[in-house]
Image (tube, rainbow, N blue to C red; front, side, top):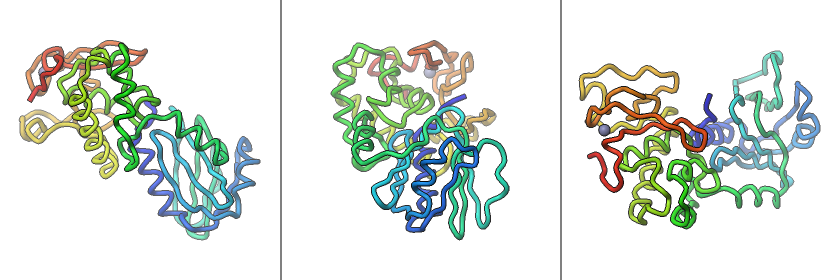
Length: 276
Ligand SMILES: [Zn+2]
């Protein structure tokens, strides 16, 4: 199981603005665990939505903000017209005259005041999918740390929204070892990784899947079978242990960093040498 990466949350924010933005929303908690919060937003207008890293925010009238973090098990479903009979543990059901939405199993589903929203933003690093992101803020942390680069990029207080797939693949594309200490990363190296994260994550928002392979390494270009994996998408090293690197043919390595499975090519990912 993986926590959804930032592109999924940005897609949800856009979707919810499209379904409910500017409308008066009815809210309830069929399961009961968010009954009080749902009662407070019910009947108010959803002004706007946003994603910040893996956090989804709905801003309602009267300075009420709904904060959702899906965690490992959270799921959102929606539809048109009348909502169906509630099935299972629905933490939050939203509905308008035109649409409905159900939220099940989130790690967080709570109302925040404006100061609490500010606290949440302050504890998150820059999000490559946000126009207001300042990548230098992340580099200030990375360049002072001896922690492996992969662990830093997975730390949401350093960069927000990146998960295992984007981090693994961006390090491959940069030709950098996941164990490189943060302080060994040059400013130029960081600028390249950041630009790559922006590109890969923006593409994932558009397509709804994570593809990181350049045209020359696509199945049709290489005459190899397409990847079969429930996460979808063509990738270089993520969850490909022992399989040949698409660039050099060396078997992909697997190891653990910060209690996460990491994958890399031991030949392509040498400090400062991009594989192509
Ligand atoms: Zn390789």
